[in-house]
Length: 356
Image (cartoon, rainbow, N blue to C red):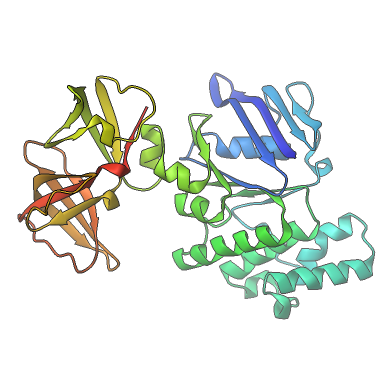
């Protein structure tokens, strides 16, 4: 069943179009991330869902009921939604328990029920022993858990999250990604999650909507968005990749330094004369000498231009013979190659993605 439906939503500010004819449907209990760079329209979209700003075109429906259109906009407090901001927005003069109880008191819930629900949610977010503390006595991760508890305890129809982990350090961000996913799985709340961090989106989401210039350029489950990005923008924004431009002729596609049979490329329909391909660094491999030929593999001579050891892997930049732009290759720690070394580059043609 559709929980939240955005139909042809647009929002302009003067002559600038922030959101352009956007369509999005969330099912009951689904977590969808709006992922994209600054200025792509993701936060504007979230604010229209929340009711903070009206759309200049299109409609928003929740449970089949119209809540926003160009002519009318239901106030935020009547939408049964909760929103979590970047700054946590918890009251410094209230204890953890008082912060979590605040929304319930506004709804005039029975005091006994408030205590029960607050105690329950604090245990769920692993803050049960800290109910009497004030925000200044908490770490950033603990404050974010309070913010999550306060948003969830009121049992919102839709939970909106606006880059909630951007103020945390790297280790806490990684921990809280899994915490948000755990809470979603436990409470089955419909969530819209705005982020510019692709790792957050990959970990937390049922689906990812990649936004560019006010539009959704690609939406699918995280695995498919990464594996089949479809466009150059999505391929470059989701993870690292190499862009290869080739020419299709006589049943093969000729790239700088190597060629592959047309049938080796995963694509729908006939290939155009000019072919654009995404090759992830982990789909390329380096060898000291040329291995034996194998199906779905091709090889090209290259030179190691530079390298960086990152603990879990090597990040190599290699230049193919006759090429000008280097390619990035990810290798295991034990696969050591020297700068300036002549190597053989192995290309896994099954992982080359043809782009529109």
